[in-house]
Length: 276
Ligand SMILES: Nc1ncnc2c1ncn2[C@@H]1O[C@H](COP(=O)(O)OP(=O)(O)OP(=O)(O)O)[C@@H](O)[C@H]1O
Image (tube, rainbow, N blue to C red; front, side):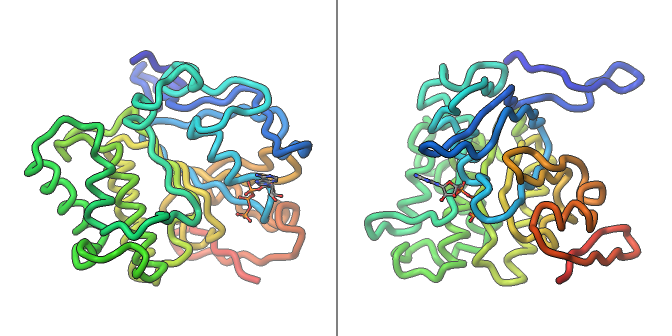
């Protein structure tokens, strides 16, 4: 797979590899232009958080990044290829999306739903089950596998759908690299208690270490900032800030983005926390 090398270290070794790129992308809903002329690159092995006020276009941007809908203008490439040219099967193996309120129209059993995530892989039922049980343990959903999805609590359901999206793209051998794979998450921790928030963040960081490119929309800046590599703030129809959480989280930037005064606290590890 041909990929654009973004940066080189002094010894010429690639430091990061662009997996997903947007060039002069315009995103609209109906007659409303939500984002104007955005150009961004998302790299292999990078965990990016996207935040911004309600209605600024975060979920719509994620939908476009997934290749499900095309932007009004501009180009989007995944792994060096125009996303619009990738088949549904290619997309399904390369990127997974967890929507904001993921649900099923029918009362699926959780285990059936997780098996469905592997439908495009040629593997024995035993291999499939081993993989599903491994991921289920990592997301603390083993005890929920026999349950009807529609009877689960919000947080339980959220962990099932997160596991499903990961199962869709990971190789059968969990030791294999995840380079070239993309995970798009829309507020995946909004219903989780503190223990499960931490668990999910730790699992995402472990997947990122194997090369997965993660883009996660979140309103919870305090939860995600210590774990993500990069934070993008959207507002005013553009990318207002793009950098490490410490670079992006300033009182000026936050008041411009959220139209209210917010305060910051720094801890000894130089992490920044936002308070009202
Ligand atoms: N299908 C649609 N038709 C018309 N307008 C839409 C449609 N989908 C979204 N919108 C509008 O587009 C804007 C952006 O919506 P989007 O869901 O991307 O926002 P968001 O930044 O994810 O917001 P939130 O933080 O509330 O989840 C909103 O004003 C929304 O009302």
